[in-house]
Image (tube, rainbow, N blue to C red):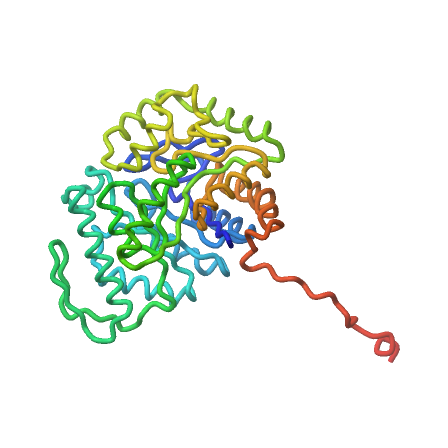
Length: 383
């Protein structure tokens, strides 16, 4: 089994401390998300062997398409996992944008389709469908997009929420970008089974992740498909377990109780089943945050979305990742505070362990040949 690792691009800002907000709630870090700083994160990810960087989507962060397009020319091989919402762009335009991005980036686009779980944020973009309808529309959207990526004749589609007539792309994306999709609600499963390449879940204890993956696997079999599976989680990896937990304690001590109260109140209103599961892991309490070996729920006290972190020595973190991989997880989307430094902690500490165990290989590193021909021979230098 070969594992793939991706990093995160915090397009709302970064910090040495936890950044509060997200998932429909305003957030910003004390390291602004300038293009210069995002280039540093992208460079750290590329240097350490991460395949791609995930960019979030929403009113609380910079636009993912525009930001990643600006980073293409300052990176060489790094791919961009661009999150977007089907409700705010037409399927034909999204299919066309994917083709354009693939050509100009030379095939470095991956897509993360986000149905959207916060009504107030969806409505700010002019989207007034309820949750069930949003998932219906996502299915129609992905159906149209995938049809367009392979069509050589105009296509038409008449759905409940979307309609296109005589749509055709001038240029197909090459390669077709893999589609990442997550969702814990009942209507999310069939959409993932039919249209996703990789089903994503957040970092819950092993038994919970296993149960969710089995759910999607059964649905995928019904549609004659086989999916990849991915995990979105934070990491705090250090030379020793004591150092890692000391860093987790430092992050927690720096959290403003007012931020916990504000964010928890906002997240409690979320319609997202995945967000509810994240909140249930800690219940807003700060005294029972290690919910499984090396699995810490402290991030979710102040951050929406992915709310857990693997905390421990490099060896411990590697072992926990291997345990998830035994469930079928092959795609890991990681992050840590701050994102430049933590990319190096993980890249220099954990990835070499996985490489030695034959579970990971640097996607771009080449073995440098041993020089056998001197720059100038003795005979040449004497002539």
